[in-house]
Length: 363
Image 1 (cartoon, helix red, strand yellow):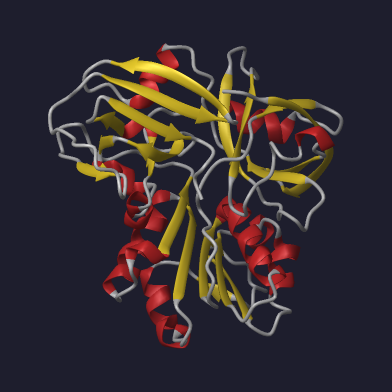
Image 2 (cartoon, helix red, strand yellow):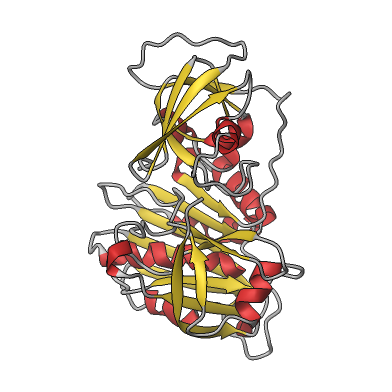
């Protein structure tokens, strides 16, 4: 995966265990590092004496902020997060991959954005909220942000600044508040959401964004679906997702719209063509081999990380052919994404003898 050397221009200590790192992108890399709100970048280094790559959401806003920013919380046992939080200083150089991900998809109509964040999950969501407001539309935002303690609130000034807008409501929720805390107490869980549900009514269509621990997001998603929210209107970013399916659980077929190619239910060897950064790479898959595996085996320089369907680094647009997809893809993508031909290369296997995927065309 291609990375570029960027200098840490500024370092801000957000909380005891969280920092924001700011990068100035050179002019010749402006297009390479163009991004949409809510996307992430992979940071590569060898802090523990071995090559490590980890994804961090961008907490900056494209077109508004003059820099690229990631906000990183130290994770127990996390070699990369510990390195970034405790050792990286202003002026240091880091290897950064271009932005990836599909958390935010723009719409043409005013929406009510229900944003549910927990802990460091605020990073991509505050960027999305700021971007929506910068658009100057008639959108409404309800921003619910859960933390344990008041001194653990990350990017608090930016979150609170959202509340100065007349169509934005911000509610901080603490599970271990101090005696002087005057905000909400508890957790952003189904019980809390149930108490607010009637106040969330709005004629504008609802769009939900979730980011935080997997248990938190799963509970919120189940609550929202039970109340009639379309699963396609709930988008989430996970930092600790574990794929909960296997190759034996069945899968879904996806045929590119208007593509008349016939597919098969049986495994096939295929020629896969991948477009990355305007360049083409080709590989030959073995029968029932994931597309990503074949590309990496051939030496193709394509974006990837976990290879397990949890990080979404290998998100692609299926441009030609038919693939069979492990059902766990719906933990990361939505059904509407699949209908548009957006898939994960690591969870996709060819069902036609030729498949073309595009790493660049994912919007």
